[in-house]
Length: 318
Image (tube, rainbow, N blue to C red):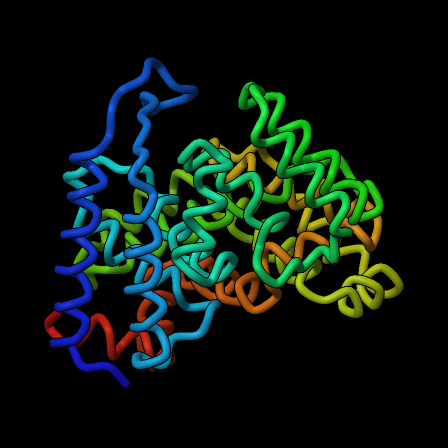
């Protein structure tokens, strides 16, 4: 288990890398939603950050389902930089997918050193070829990336290739669902960082709403294991009803995540299996736990007492 000193060192080193990311950003115009759009072409910084974190996780005994705890701590420590929260998680995913800096650099050049394009190909050009894409199709896709195409055209090419090897399942954007999932998880963990920040947790609790918290918890429970879903469909209409929820969710981010997960829940098994490849069942279980902890300060304190990792990280005066 990593010490509190090692955690402090990780936060300092992560901040140093993210400060370089911030310094290298160039504004390229208005973005969608709340955030302006920037480009950062020195993509080796993402690989550096991902490598740093992946070296730390095993030393600290942190499994994939608990990584959001560290992501939230780094985000809190670097919130003054105003970087997109997804950079931390995607940096880890790039290292896991592309494995070596040389290969990552090769893929990055194909993607014009664009974070957005790298995200589009992470499962298509991963070193392990998780979708078992044929060599001829991979070569054709690479050649297309080398041609003069727009970002939207590139996305369509990536989507078509992915659909070919996943049975064309669903129109659901699993990458976007993973982004939404991680963003919601990170926001909740951020509210848990300071045990004394009860007012912040209460604001988040009210913003999401108790019925919505319950609905999202039930949705995750049903999606995490196909056997559970089948059993509930046979025996419990109540659980399905709770998953669908009642009143509209006030929080836009949570509402979008809940809708996407419900669409997958009502879809076919292939869609749900595909979702679990992007959001593992263990991660769904972890989000269920922290949603339960968000229900009330009593549940939050119960969570602190029972989660050994949580206590180790946040009670060590980091």
